[in-house]
Amino acid sequence: MFSESLKFLMLKSLISMIARWFGSCYKYGAVEREISQWLVKEGYNLKDTVIADIQLRAIERPGWVQVYSFQVTQTLDSNADVLRYGVLRSDERFGNSAIRVFSNSFERNRQLGIWSENLIRRRNDT
Image (cartoon, rainbow, N blue to C red; front, side, top):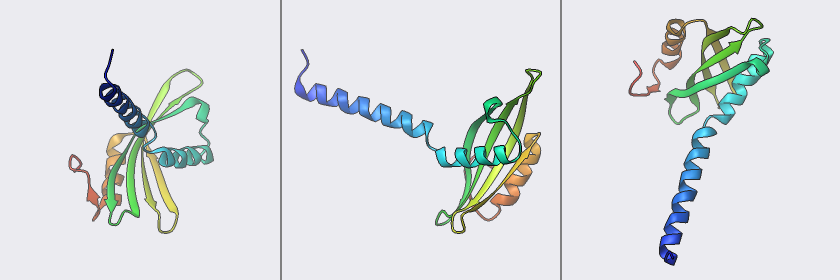
């Protein structure tokens, strides 16, 4: 039905698609764990909390210092969702990081600007 070379190309394509999917799902796994640990420390219940939209926003060469933005949606007892905006600054040389969570994106973007100063930023960020 299919030639061996076509079967090989189809299998290679499938493996590539799966690798891209897993790569995008777990791209920021370590960052998400760090945010989760911080949220628990700050009193958030992870069962009612969703971390989303994690993005690398700035980096310092050779890559030790990284700044990420993210969003946290918390479902309250009244079934109302509260959206918060966060920023994480990680310095892998010393193994420390700082996280701030804000009630609006303006405050988060202001902190993002402070922590990203003199770093290499994503093109679409100001």
